[in-house]
Length: 279
Image (cartoon, rainbow, N blue to C red; front, top):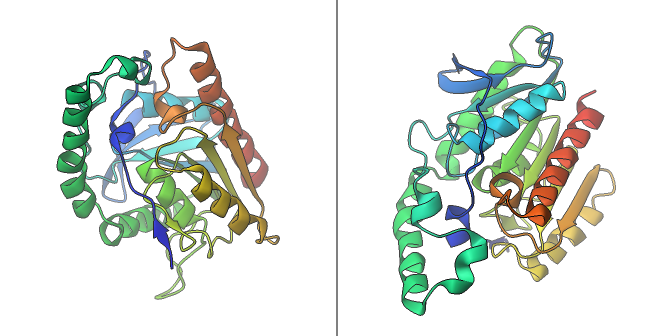
């Protein structure tokens, strides 16, 4: 039986980053998409970002997409939520920066805890797998037919992390070949089914996990490590980031040298993985 790992207030916390995205917006496969091109515009190494619950307009995600483009990847960040991402305001309104949580009163913590199911519950139902996965599969199929596109990697965070893992299953065979990436990188994935999401993995998969992630406790991380270790025919890696919480690879507090370093290392992990398997 697969164990489903849920979401918590950590999904709604983190920090906004400073900077101005340099990409452009276009419509690809019927979805509004942020596109960041590498120098020269080659599509031979293509990556698709699957965002967290804050969606394709979240500045942190766009800045990270630009970083992948500078590293030589043609980068797409589609609106898989179709205009219905969780508002950015929740980053500050639902839960303060993680380093300030120790100052919260019991009443304040209770208020935050109550907001989470009220906010996420209906949203997760609306954006369940039966709705979201076909959108992602269809987008990847569209890219497969785009002239100049060769190998495609998928980068996923939090909510999108699980869908990156699902793309590492390879193309669906019924009916026909649908979706499926050539390589996947997932940072602090949530809503995982263990072992169900990992048994079918057939493409190179890299995971970046925080040791303080409230959604992936030590026992669950151990199960994932054991499952992938048995898949000797599939290239994979799991890197554990000490003292890092859920969202660290996308929403770290840059005022913390430790947290900024972890985010930078996770970014390098994803880029190096894609460089290796999309070449």
